[in-house]
Amino acid sequence: MHKVIYDTDPGVDDSMALVFQTRHPDIELIGVTSVFGNATIETTTRNALYLVERFAKPSVVVARGAGKPLRRATPEPIPHIHGHNGLGDIDLPELEDDGRGRLDARLAHRFIIDEIRKHPHAINLVAVGPLTNLALALQEDPEIQHLVKQVIIMGGAFGINGILGNVSPCAEANISADPDAADQVFAAAWKVTAVGLDVTQKAIMTTEYLDRLRQDGGADGQFVWDVSRHYEQFHIESSGVHGIYVHDSSAVAYLVAPELYQIRRGAVRVVVEGLAIGQTIQKPATMGVPAPNWDTLTQQDVCVDVDVEGFLKLYYQTIVGRAA
Image (tube, rainbow, N blue to C red):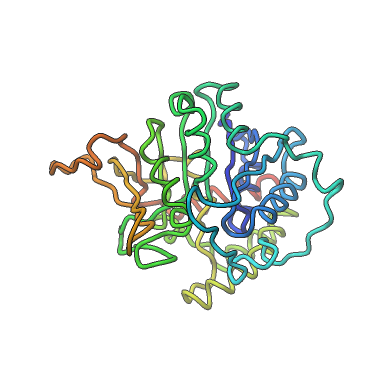
């Protein structure tokens, strides 16, 4: 079983990835930590509480996380992408007791520290929003970088097949939202795998695929269809894609099926000042040219290709298998 702490800013694709985790037989979801990003921290925390109440086991709790970057202004929410409520403007019921029964008393970074220490070398951190909570956990307890099993992030863009960014010509949204935190996370001693736009924009769920999930996947498939309607319209208008890029579920897929991905090893830095702020730059391990700002850092993994058919089959079988 893969023990997971899911660090997230739900978010349409975040919610689809959470359903995927709760339905996959090899994942044990320990808890969900919220962070600002797709919406305000109040909205993302509320959405996380709704999602765990609807889909996760009773033992899964939510810990509220950072509401702003380490040292920058908080980015504005993006309702044109994720809806005003962060979940595609689907109808959301009132939470019983305002969700307090699922809300952990600890802040997200403290929850992360405590759970890693409780389960040394067993926790997978799957982070699909800004990396502020992970950086705060590192700052408070640097030893956890030696105690976590691995860190998988949905973030970055490394120029594979010309894919450079989605909020600027050189930056991806999660990294750009807190580049200082991202730089710290990549530089730490723990094992990081970046599942960035280079592969997530290849992994497209078409309208037909989503409709098949709706027809075959029971209540879960219907939820995926409903939550993705506003999101798909954004893709049609912004990219001409009749479907959706599958960002966050790709990070979960890497956890359970890394064989679907090709990786490139090498230290990663994040640009934290200037015109290219938020850019992720990897020095491949095969590059022999000296680069002092990279050469002393941990060699991390960056996904550079994906078996799209295999990924889509994995997601479909995980959702539909539960309904069968």
